[in-house]
Length: 310
Image (cartoon, rainbow, N blue to C red):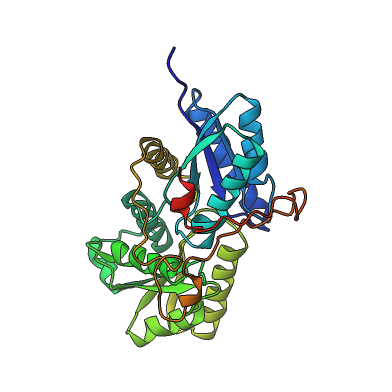
């Protein structure tokens, strides 16, 4: 009898936005429909139901013992590096006998860059445009923003990869929270660099409070600068490329082909101003729906994702 493949457990950030949470749940359901032989479940680290622990319980009740967890996140910040591994370690204590491997974050994958390019084309409109028209378009890629410098650097990496070979005047970077430059400062910078037309491109998977804020800030800035043409592009959304990419990350995790980025990871290397984080134990974010904030506060030392991947 062949061993069944490990179940796919999708871990999301969580959002206060109902539509955003529903988009995640829809996406998980669609993955399950596309892969009927594979047990698939998903949950959130915080803010919205279901919590990740419920997704694990659901799979365990279906007889699953082996998991591959994939973070449905573009960038590895504290969530992907610390909270999810810590949450998985807690689930292992809760359900003795389960084993899991842990996949990589999604971006900046070439398939996602293609979707971003499509979003830019949609925002620019199709009125008989030629590739040469891109040479007067400056893109402002707006990431979530993090207190983790490595995570912010990943957004810059995505911006550079989006610029390579696509013919835009430039691709600048900004963040909606926790990191500079913010959206208005990013737009100011584009203008100082001589931008004629700007498209603001949210580096987000699904609709939510933060992408809405990007659009509002863009519209506010545009109203104050009527001389600049500014357009807003849409989020990535539940595209076929995204569904395929999650499966690619799943396959990698199952095969154990993981190359996590540790060379500029704040939990491993002393980066200027962040020296206090090296070797810090990573603790789970407690989801508001989780029972008990006390029993279950196990400190997982050496808390980089590596230590939990086994």
